[in-house]
Structures are given as C-alpha cells and as structure tokens.
Image (cartoon, rainbow, N blue to C red; front, side, top):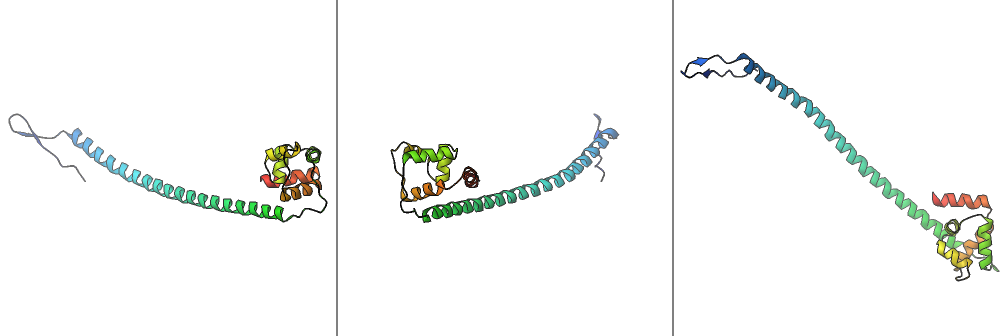
Length: 162
C-alpha cells in the first residue's frame, strides 16, 4: 500500500510536488511498525503461553507439597502409635544414671537421643539429672533403646531425620 501523496502549496497557492524523501520515510515507518507488530505479537503469544505453563507448574508443586505433608503426618502418627503399642517388660526400671550411661554408650548428643526416643532434649536432661521420670510409653522407648547398638541407633536417627 502506498501512502497518500499530499501536495503542499506555496505562498501563492500554487501546488508543489511533495518531497520524495518525506513520502519514502513515512512509508518506511509504516512498514516498520507493521513488521514490529507482527514480531512482537508472536513474542507476546509465547510469553503468555509460558506464564500459563508456569502457573500450572506452581499449582502442581503446591499439590505435591500437600501430599508430602499429608504422608509425613501419617508417618509420624504411625510411628507414634508404634511407640505407644510397645509394652514395658515387667521389671523394667528407670535410673537417671542409666539414661546418661546409655546415651554415652551410643555416643549420641542429648538432642539425637531425644529424637530417637521421641521426646525433647530438655526431657532427656531432666531424666539424667533425676528431676523427672519418664511416662510409661517413654519408659518403653528407653527399654527398646537399651538393646540397640551404635550403628542401629545411627540408622534409626537417619530414618527419623529423613
């Protein structure tokens, strides 16, 4: 499409020929705008598609995170019920000295020992100092840990932490 030619008049009202360069520049500008629109339109479409895909992936990640949290909570509940089902053998006793000796024998920190038993680190310290006594379920966990070796304790810790 060729741009419309506009004739300009001089002071006396006589039409003069337009300048060829001006008409050529206007046509070049028009074609350049058209080409830029075509180029940017494909880029815009691609960007829109990418945004859709990103939003879809974010939704998928959120769904996966919810599933992971659900499975972790179910696993924690399962571990807690497994601990509570353990019965304390008859004649099992508690001694503050034995808790500390057990922890030292396994070469575990109070925090690691607490994770292994399913209690807080402060609870382990209280037991070791004789300020508190374990509940029945906690005593069962203490008795169960007595039969563990260092390697087994480390393996259980790794399983609990992961």
